[in-house]
Image (tube, rainbow, N blue to C red; front, top):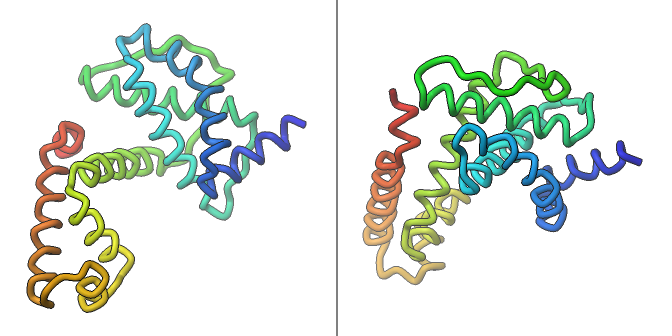
Amino acid sequence: MAELRDQHYIEAIKTGDRVVLQTIYQTMMPSLLRLIKPTGGSIDDAKDLFQDAIVLIFKKIQQPDFTLTSAFSTYFYGICRNIWANQLKKKSSGHVTLEEDTKYNVVTDGDWHDLEEQTTRTRIFYRAFRQLGQDCQQLLQLFFQQKTMEEIMQEMQLGSYDYARRRKYLCKGKLTELMKNDPAYQELSR
């Protein structure tokens, strides 16, 4: 029965099933708060940690050789412990020890740090993207969907091809600026 639920969670992450993701959130949040509060973490840190873990798991389960070898909750919590320990290590520039519980240790392969960095970059991107105006968001979404400038111009009812190109350039510039001003981006650049 637990294996079916665990597989259900994996499928929900693959498909972005909001109802099941909300169930995972409600189930795991108390554990995440118990993990981070003793080391100065907040509810916002726990929410960010949850999102980072979901993104990282999503990337891991896309790999053809992915196999869940423990209960989903154990796997999820282990990933959160690793992410949180790495974040604390970066903040303190030293050694960080979390209360040891080998039940939650997750053995990860060599690409763990790359995946964590990609997750951080993705979070920075979406935070910056949400700060853009609606028109810039729409224009960039169309651009990311590989629509031609003519299609973008028509869909957004922009006056000319040159104006559409200029708007895209300005929106991308604003997005880049917002990303570079994000403290997490500056932390990655060190």
